[in-house]
Length: 371
Image (cartoon, rainbow, N blue to C red; front, side, top):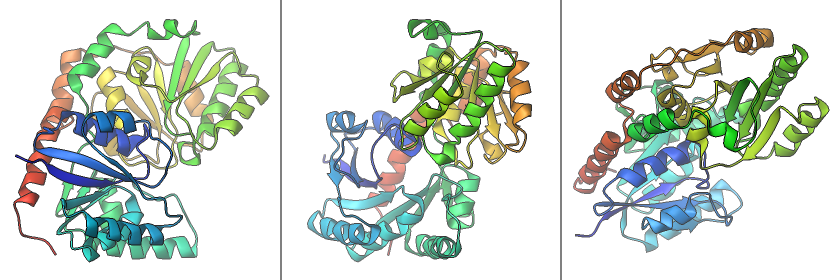
């Protein structure tokens, strides 16, 4: 039996939120029945490209310089590749371009997937485009998926007829990592008393400038700490410059993209996430599965708190409250069985979600419903 091939539209398969969510599902889905291929917008190699190809997937780069050109290239590609009956787009507002291309190419099943609660832009033209793109998303998508209620409300203005597919992980793997990697930081360098971590792309939305201000204040107060920043992105040079200007070279370390992030979280005391906005970050599911407390900005949806007592929300208007919270941080271990039971009951077990997604795709493939 030939597997159903689903075409995912995503900018580049790097170690970022939506991409990691996709890979978690792809690793666990029955690939004898469903195969994933990925349209990307760059010639540069993605972090996951080798693994995708090893699992039987294809990387299909569309190298046009703007969304309009990509739309026409995607339409042309789909007309030449009749094996694709399902297109699943993950690029928020720009989903509209790809759903339009898919419709014009005669693709019956067009999925718009929302992974965020904002596009991070403002101004008259940006607001107009946002409203127009949201309208097109709703009218062109035959199925709608979101990582959470707020992400659904952002892109679709409703949660009705939207499948809320949680950003699930391999719970058993994370619980095992939590149990056996408490001293992992010592393999990298001798860490100070307080061990902090921030995971995410080095861009403005993740607000690393705020984190470095926290680090500077901690040092001024004489608090011993080590702060690992995980990720890559356009602000790397400016972050390194700030580390040097603040005299934090012995405390703050940029580790780049890593494949051992869960191990690093297991050895940390607190994760920082002072983001300007987020959808439902996979890393927050991972951190809570590890048992790692996190301090988040109030801009992040409350639904990321999985009721384990590991998440605290603070205002970005009061940096001193972040410093005081870290200064007084005391971690109380949570039994692994309690974590597993809670996250599994809340729908964050990727093994179950991959079966649900398999059945979803199979139902679409066997259905003639769609326009």
